[in-house]
Image: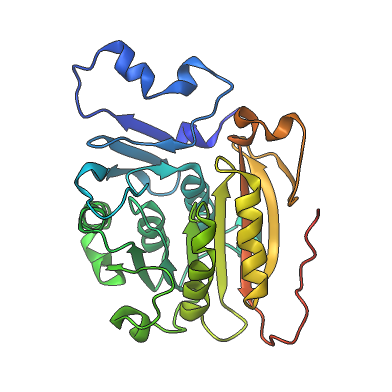
Length: 293
């Protein structure tokens, strides 16, 4: 059966690599039960094979030249692949994941695939943001420049944004102007959950039409993901829909806690949590979604 990882091809930077080096970068080729959760290494090219837009090539940033802290923006994660599959399919979930005509803000853009596809898929405006690290932002701009045709360049921009900073020029200019916020695999740092939610609420439109698209893998553990949704609800967001899906498209009910073999390292790497959130119009209203325990 086809998996998300079949949509990705990696072109290594050095074609003269030894075979053992090539296999070391692709554990899924050796351990077939161990699904690779991230793709790309410094200097490599990632090719996303879109059914709608054809091949999209992405270069990776080199984290070795980032002095402030080690980021994971040099990788494309499976959550990002699933995100672009959903937003590029106008019929997915009855169109509830469509970005056509929407003003889109991406948090944690990484290599830029989600923002690029949102631009190609007809968004009115796309703002791709990531942590203010020059090497990451430069690579993001280069990928967008190479992938987006000239007639759409006015539809997107790349900006620095540190989660929780609502006083920057970007934050002031775009306050409550984004009808769609997308964030793939941004949930592995519990100490940043509140800052992330603050950014989401700040940029999301004030009316009932705004949506946040949140997707993440379980490779860092279920507890961290559950904690994010708890913070989101506490801060005035509602979870409109949430479920779990594996790389082959099999769905199951989201649960904050799940034991057994399905939570060992190999099995949890195959699963994503997929959710749509919206603003709670009145903070006095109870949360609309009851999480399964």
